[in-house]
Length: 521
Image 1: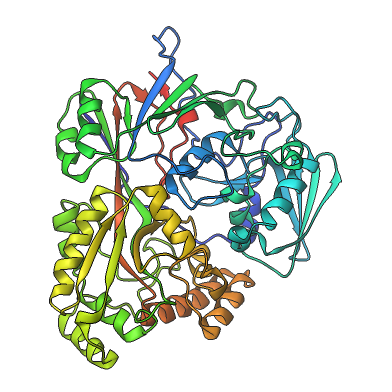
Image 2: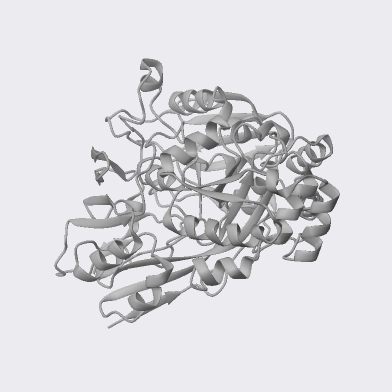
């Protein structure tokens, strides 16, 4: 019998500091009181036939299994299976809760004390202590790409074997969110000291560990026995992630029983799967914005009038209808809609006449614009084709360039691009706002060199009062929207499809699934 699981709303409430800290308390038996799976059955009923493998079809190969050298949603999906941070994001509320930390307290608005769970084991058998936490966070601080998530930490010290104190440079509203970010996941100090390659040898504390990476074909994870959170331990011993780039092939494989879970359903196949017996389709309204990024340091895209002209000429309704089969939500703002702080201040909507006016203000020859858009999958190629048609009305030629995920991310990382299509799905509005700071221009294509914007971002980071911070974020978003350093194309609705005999599936609005909680009925 077909079942449809649909999230009809997102719980995205502003959280005062004390409420966040309250969520960062855990029971002494290792369970997390802020678990996203509260109320979810712990596993299969007694006497049920239990399969020992879960087969997941993915769109492409993650460029890395390390936590240090990527900006890939697929890699983060792997990371959250194998690593933990001091905190984690609750998949239901999108709030930070304690993870490796048993509790957290804050004094003087800048001194944060974390008490660790005891007896936590890394995949290599070593026990995690404060020394590993200090070494991991200090190492992350040494990485330029991690600056946004580590710069607030002025001092990190071990008070004893299971207590860590973090002192921030100033009051900072985003620390607990940052500590849940993959750069700040905890690894063994011994391996950092040895110069371990965490891509080839990803060693964390997570519920799964790497068994085999068959490059270009599959990644196999196996259960980490003795995982420290009993209610979050892996229910299925083995998970095999197979690389199946074509959407139709993923759908056929699920229907045929060759895979058990399709992580990303091709929009053209949603209706077919919803009508299939023995398949569950989860519909997940997300906080992911799919974005056209410009290289804002390259002429002529260093001119806001040209960027605004392109933003006004792109018909988002066309994109959703033609490339997504109607599955998506129009969004013109640089921040996802759904957060308490979400706003469309100064957003540039589709308006061809306004686009022509911006183009005239730019004053250049539209035929001279070489707009090459990098697209990393078949859906984005289809979107690029719609943009190509839209901008032809302005006389701007568009070249849609298809690349695999690794090549596209490398072009982004090295700055060797004119425009690229990507997505961004953080769990909170402050992370969105911080990405526009000029010091992020080497790692985030939507960042822009603006002293005014930098000042606003710095003020928002240090504002602990949620209402005051929301007002500052409104100013940040309004400024970015008026300059179009990036063009939001739409907000995703995700579809995850899986064998109806699976349960415990919780799909986050940020894009992730904890496969350790999934079990066969």
